[in-house]
Image (spheres, rainbow, N blue to C red):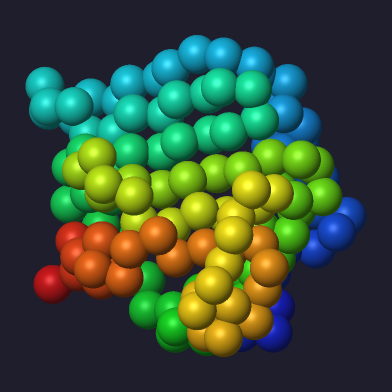
Length: 137
């Protein structure tokens, strides 16, 4: 739901609740996404850890203009949902850790930026590169 100038994840959002329950139900496996015969992303599931590796992040570009604080607020809400359900989701850029959300996130300095115990910045360099890769020129 869009509200408060960001993509708001309400506690009663049926779609997000269904997505979280589906993620929790999957115990093990891998999903590979190919675009134009290139491996664009790989999602690995192992118990309560979901790893999303954006191998070709350029394929996931968006032109939508959402401010940093709006994105951060949405990430905090989603990370809290993951924690509440005992899940952790890690995002990688071309095989390198960028950010982790959810139960096993161990924020240090990132807590000052995100004001959340559920978001861990694994690599500022990879997050910066990922942001650049995903931005539509």
